[in-house]
Amino acid sequence: MSVTGKAFSRKSIEGLKAETHGLHRALSWPHLILLGIGCIVGAGVYVMTGTAAAHYAGPAVIISFLLAAAACAFTGLCYAELSSTMPVSGSSYTYAYASLGEVVAWGTGWLLMLEYGLAGSALAVGLSSYLVNVLGDFNIIIPQAFSTPMITSTLVDGYTQFALTGGVNLVAATALLLAALVLSLGVSKSTFVTSLLVIIKVFILVAFVAVGWGKIDTQNWQPFIPANEGGFAFGWPGIFRASSVLFFAYLGFETVSTAALETRNPQKDMPKGILGSLVICTLLYIAVAATLTGLVSYKDLNVADPIAVAVDRMNTPQFAMLIKIGAITGLASVLLVNGYGHSRICYTMARDGLIPPIFSKLHSTFKTPANATIIVCLISAVIAAFLPISVLGDMVSFGTALAFSVVGFSLIWLRNTHPDLPRPFKVPLGGFRAGKIWIGYVPLMAIILCLGMVVPVAIDIVAQALRGDILPACFVIAYVILGALIYMFYGHRHAKREV
Image 1 (tube, helix red, strand yellow):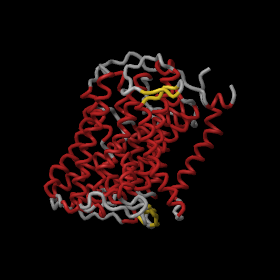
Image 2 (cartoon, one colour):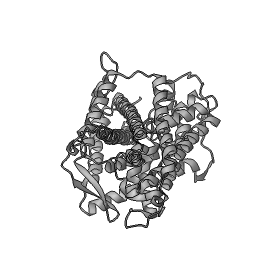
Image 3 (cartoon, rainbow, N blue to C red):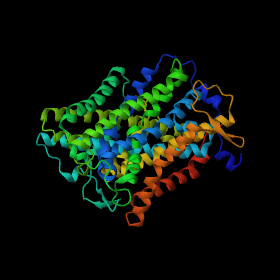
Image 4 (cartoon, one colour):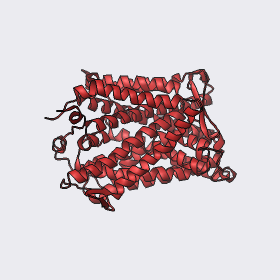
């Protein structure tokens, strides 16, 4: 096989389908909605809402949530069709491997590793901020030198500017190391505990809105769309820029699509499950954002614990403590789930031969990919100690949006190359033909909107580099180069290809 042939070799769909057979169809659309809500509600709303409002959108962060939700809705429908066709892990990495080939799958997997790795860092930074806030309420003061990242960010002339603080966020790093320990020992999959954590996460947000709504100062909503101050500082450019940040808030929606082969009536229930969970979470996010910006001026929300800052303004100490502890519990649970997902992506890629086998080695006692877990959590811990939440959120959304766009391309490719495959669920709205190529409206919109999430971040990174703030640009370039080198000198040579 030629070098090019190897790079674009594909996994057979028949082989993938053989990995999962005879799944029990027991789920209906209410089950899918609950699954979606449980997976979606997490770091984004607890951590990134403040940054999006303070840096870019002001009270109009509400509109940004709607734009991000639209991109996720179209992508989610693509996930649903692909997962009903290939009932495996539901990962965009797997879909890319079966449709677009090995090298695209590698790039997608590398982006997913960026997403999960930096999402873990962002979760830990948010968790550390809420924890420091709670400890402060008990007069236990954590020095800023140990609870703030080495680099901080501010908005100057509409673009992000960085400065050194001299601190190192050891609290966030410690949280990730503890997560690595727990995950390495193995986490029992208790339905009761999982359901309880979902209830806590949602209850905290609902309670925050219910109590906070009556204490809102409507002057904080004026103007609803602050005038543009140049670049992405407010106005409509800021709203679009904030939507790319808040893409983070919807991570996890794709999990619903992985249940397609366990759904009683996927053609009807999958869109209800995906869109229903997105609609409910979007309405909840809008209510939280409106309450947040009504309680506190958006200018004061450039923090990693915006809900904690807001409840402190209510002058209800006991309620504030309840909300903060609930937020910590929710973030801790999501941190564990994120670490679990990250290690499993590494495990899958290592089994495919694309990264070294150390990532697929299981612990002799606990039967977990302990090496992968420890390595990825260590890397995330170092990053959390040094980088601010704004950079972490941008990079997560950047990697996620690019990886999600691959899902749209994969669907179009498979519809054209394997038109006769059984598809229990098909994306709605149909499509059109460009010559002999079928292009669906739903996957096309998914591609456009996901790439649209990338554009503002890319423009901001370039603008920062031109002003001398090269950190984000160097990070992206170094990550791309590192990925290319690993694939060229390891993955390409060791990939386990089908004969």
